[in-house]
Image: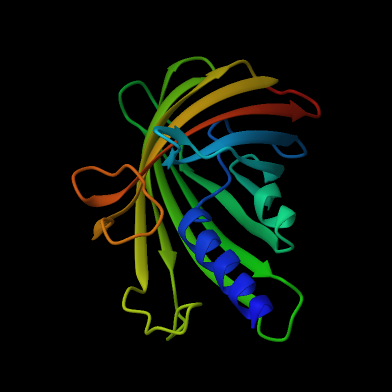
Length: 228
């Protein structure tokens, strides 16, 4: 019984936190053959004691450019691993357009999130697609805004209740600055702004009574023959 409660608790927490948990985004395009390693920290702003702080979710990601406008990526969330749950994400970034002066670039990012605690009933797979619009304000310095779309296709939640929401959105905006080799990033998210958050046991900061706000910081190192 305790094991079942523990498994349910872990999946409930991760279901709230894991939407686009990879903090850093590959805004700076990778050329064919280049790769990048990312490290990021941050999360939803949550009450801890008498104060509110971003949860220190730690993630690592890897990107590899297979074309000059297409990269594949993978990521690992260390918080879930600490609770005995393997949480991976795999996907791609496709630069549909590159920015030109005031005309923004567009990145399409399909992903799949995989969670498992290695039990017969402890496996979840969630598709997600992100759309990012970004501007290059100077060489290798960007501002961006976008939205993630996470799809819950299970009929029941991890706690056994009926799943009423199957399309969860997360708007975000951020800034990415540095050079071709090193990039630093700050990002703010608004998780599920269409859902009321005042009934949750965990106290989060939203906008009004809707959604949860998150803050993130990350660093990105590009490897390979630098072409730009």
